[in-house]
Image 1 (cartoon, rainbow, N blue to C red):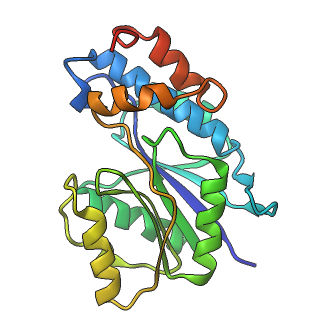
Image 2 (image 1 turned 180 degrees about the horizontal axis):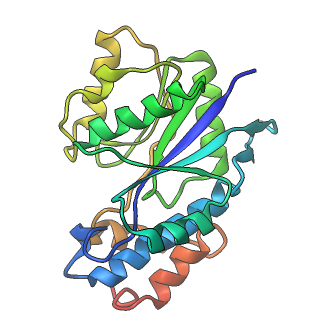
Length: 234
């Protein structure tokens, strides 16, 4: 039986340390609340239990892990625990983004998991069907990735460790996904791409995505965008 693990890769929502690219248009406190709203909606999308039924109609079971940074904020971590009660928790290691992602995959593979997905926490449009599609594609491909509109990726899935994928060290540029595809080709790893998404990193992203956020799919983010301090006027 295939053992599956999904790693939610996130920052703890701490004022002044999260969504910093949205200041000064948003206060540091509002940036932190924005991150909390994204996490709350994602918890509901993932079902809170690590069991989803996607468009295929087939139930997919997996163990959920939350890989967070920074460490040393017990009150924030307790709030995150309350959102993802069924999840395992472990802190991200020190280092660049690639080092931290590589380490997160290593931890779950070392624990005996066969198929692993890692996704970010700043994609409002993620659905259970998207996750189901990623699991399905991973059955027949060695690597699965979900591209972002800005040239990065919002999800990566692996069946075996793939350190080369994370060795580049250059992130935050518009060619991250392109370089990842080239690495897969160079290393002869089959790659499947799933739906492209828009992430939420800047105030421009917030303005662009705000009209698409619905109360039905993203109730916490919807509430924040319409009631949050300094947000409704953006």
